[in-house]
Length: 125
Image 1 (tube, rainbow, N blue to C red):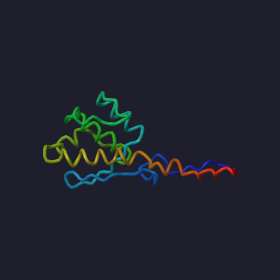
Image 2: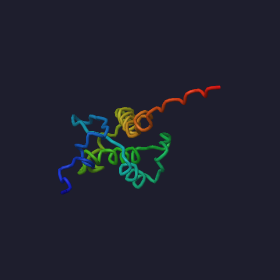
Image 3: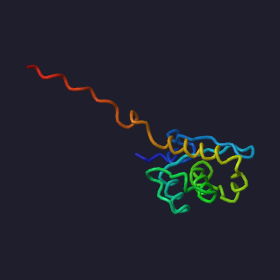
Image 4: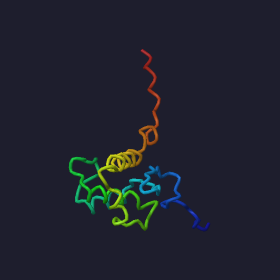
């Protein structure tokens, strides 16, 4: 049987990707952290992100790198230089909030991964 070639898995149209919208300069970008985005952000920032982010060590350069990394799935041609002008004192809270939401959305709910199992019946005594 031939393998289908019209799959959306791994593309921006993948329905399993949980995007977070972020509007900057009148354009709405879709953010998603997956392992590729985490790896790219770690490469660009020099920070280990797998277990979370210490926001006290995130400056403009790191914020921009994280933003670019989590935009790559939906916006593969995005360049860091395009986003620099939007990282202002006025926008940092909005950007940080979207990055946090994208991070949280990247982790499946506990119920999604591990459905509850019925408790065993008490032993007949």
